[in-house]
Image (cartoon, rainbow, N blue to C red):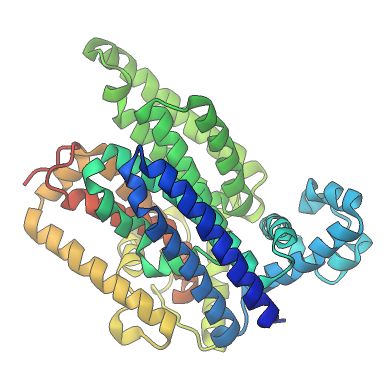
Length: 444
């Protein structure tokens, strides 16, 4: 069922729009007195807000359906349940989907199959709380979602500006001006929450490891962000945490100033980080359901099969990488094709709808920049990447994650949502490579 967006919703949406911008401008004006990074605050906010509105208009008036409606409609009824019986509703808020007796509640009775997924139930709970604030109106709820997503991404951008203060303007393009990331990362979707959580996680890690500040706050944010991603898309953490630990290892020079101590402790730290990454992945995997490491091969195969079926039956934009064996060796063989489809496709001649055109234009720009870098630096490019540990981390995560989503999506529409973290990190990595004066040591 498509949520109604009538005159009341537009009036209420306008009120929330004004309210958000009023507080944002006041906050920006105060912060800009001590940090000129905030001169871009309102521009960045506007990309997310208008991205959310764009997603809403496309969902309601063009696509006429989608996961966003399912989340909102279920949360709509859940919010009403909150108002009718707040004590019982609060009890259910802290229960996992496997502990719920769905038949006991009228709002959930006909949706128990949908709510059985822990990730879905988490999104519904978050949306229901937002709906209570937005008077159960789809437009204001979307505006709140896009604002919350903005806060996570802004803080990630902010700490990168601390590392590269001369790149404040260019970094905006990587974090806030990739059209598909703005569109799919600003509506009522799982992806909006996960991209915000990744932003907070990166903000906390950089504060803790490189900037050495706000340690207590950063540790709390790391826990909250990790749990949020683990509940929604735990497979992101299987790639992100190992890459983060390697990044920490690569930044030992900033952590341990003494050359002697660094050489003595480097092997032990490397072992500790590798073991920590392994045990963390195993722990996250225990409650990850179909996303557990042991089931990941079957899950990837299931995603591929489902998205292929959707493409064929609903005439959506599908793609193929040929027959895929989901064993480690089979995936290894598909790495070049998976990277190609994630970052450089769809090609212009594969376009058959508006959203595919957006992806094709982005892919064309990234292709041109990649070819230009390869021609300019040739084999020296790999040495330049290795010398800058931030770039190495960004590209390592984006390429590995790009393989995972490229090999499992088989549908350009689904891929455009799944690849957002990889696409953002890849573009930011290229911006750092293109920089001629960054402190990471990339040379002419």
